[in-house]
Length: 135
Image (cartoon, rainbow, N blue to C red; front, side, top):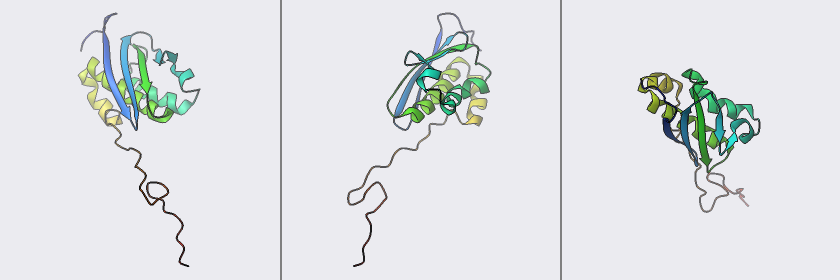
């Protein structure tokens, strides 16, 4: 296990839907900044997203050991929260490879493959059809 120095940082990229989050872990006291704002402000006080972002740090008991500095872009708020979680988990792996079983068991290392299906021609949306009229 490597010791985190004041200048060391650990990097991870997370993705979900069309959102991408570039995450840096720096030794600190547990502050989380997303696009230069505290994550509570960035997610507008929505508890669900705040919980999602904190999960990898809480599972590994690293909440008060690192500051998280992240840039999130693309997608919506839900996708960005999921991308942040994925990115934080990957950055924690860079810090200590022995955290892999815990993170894997909680499902934080798996990239959620679900994407929006494209709209098809002759249909209203991806699968919805126009109303059928027999006569």
